[in-house]
Image (cartoon, rainbow, N blue to C red; front, side, top):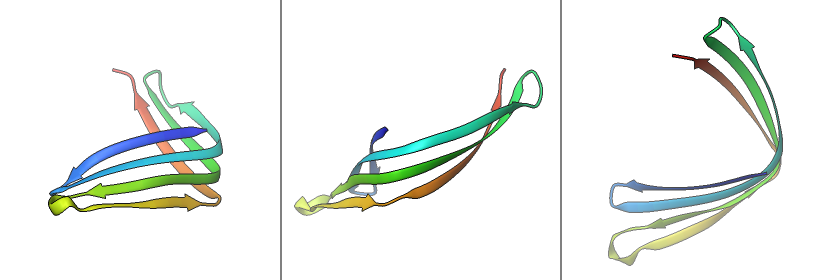
Length: 82
């Protein structure tokens, strides 16, 4: 289960988002050397839901619900220990 929130400013507009995802994460990391690792991960989301809100000058306010069915996210990562 993932809960995420974020906020940003784009020009004169303020945005905020919130998301809830239910899914399964599988991943593996491989040590290339003692200080360098590389990894691959896959996340299968059973469901997603959230809200996007935007406010701006002149009293502008808007929001939109976001929902979806299943999805697959693939990730690649590299890590280096200094």
